[in-house]
Image 1 (cartoon, rainbow, N blue to C red):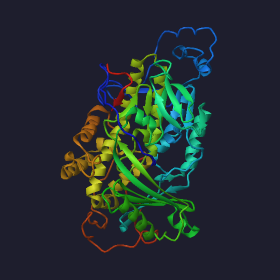
Image 2 (image 1 turned 180 degrees about the vertical axis):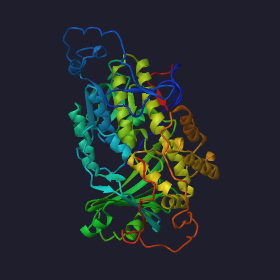
Image 3 (image 1 turned 45 degrees about the vertical axis):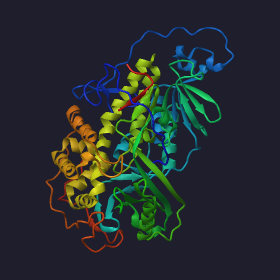
Image 4 (image 1 turned 30 degrees about the horizontal axis):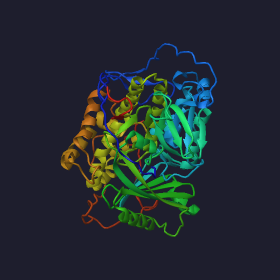
Length: 570
């Protein structure tokens, strides 16, 4: 989760004539490409490496001296990295050294390009974040990356505002927990080892693609707070949801949530009680939930809900901490932050500038998980920024930026569309979801598969008939075509169309094998928001008092020609 605010404005433009339509047909970038080579998805759903582009050699550099080193040669004529360095033009400049920015810098650097990574803070620095590393995050890390895990999660306790607590356990690790300072710093180190150059204490005030600071149409000017101007062939904005680069691109945010979090040191006896187990508490406000993530001798405790419920969110946080018996421990850090999800038509590029991660509003709408989205979108942004940097004209640069947008649309965009539908259901029927995940083994197996990375929520909806029919039934009961919850949080026809288009245009994943739904295992069905509880409240969750269900021997084991610089709408 990130803690910044975004400006959101900008025109929308359609793809140029001849470009593939969004998410269907044509060739779109694959979302699982390696850092060393871009890939494309063909009409038949298969993937193939994108062929190397051919072209005539660049003209010879002009001779002569110049007084300004940055303009010693015409940057449009510079292609050799060594000469580009002398001319002061970087191939790729990445703004922001979080997971998205570090991943983008790594991807561009391993491709052999001159990459500059800018970060306004000194590293390592604290970031408000639960720190959960699920399977997709782990699979998107650079080769040889060793996760600085603080704990390995094998059990999850679910509760409804402190009631109806039940714990599900797994023999296999579900996901890991990290602290962001160490995790982010290690990602940056990998980018540096790949060849990227890091500059901390560098605050970007704006980017320019026109004007006196820009020598030609192949160059972007990055202006720093101290007045220095950097030149680049491509820029990647990964500077959080308050992104100045996102404002330049015209990113539009829809769903906005407020999160509160505290890092609470606890005695060894308390830490031992939480070891290997997390708590997820469905909260009292629609769409809200709380969490406890153990990290050695510290518990990361937080809550999140829709923006506009600040006082209620604060009360929820206070009640949550008190209910856990943690009020007597002084937090080392208490923080608040906003998370933002992009609208489905928000642009991801403008000219030679791409955005990724929180700067693009890319995170899971239901859980607000953002690390995996940052790592995956950052890698793609770095790969396609290399192509943008190689583009000799605005039309080619636009084509490569569109390929990046298509890659996001085909992967993370589909996941977000399903996540919006799940959030709409959760906002109105949290008790139903709680009873399902705690009482039905197939639902728990699906949760375990998603957290481990052996399946995705979007993939299950596409390929598993039972899951698809269940969500469709909930859609009808919710009438989500008219929108649910606060403005920007509902699910419109376009969200369902995105999922349905994906069903038709993408090769389905291997179907996940789930058991026929069985009756809930003595699970209490909690009351919905605003209704009286069906049973008396249960004690606060603890390792000893939770109703607990493990993956037993008999259980199903979890599975393994427009303006070339105008914003691109996905």
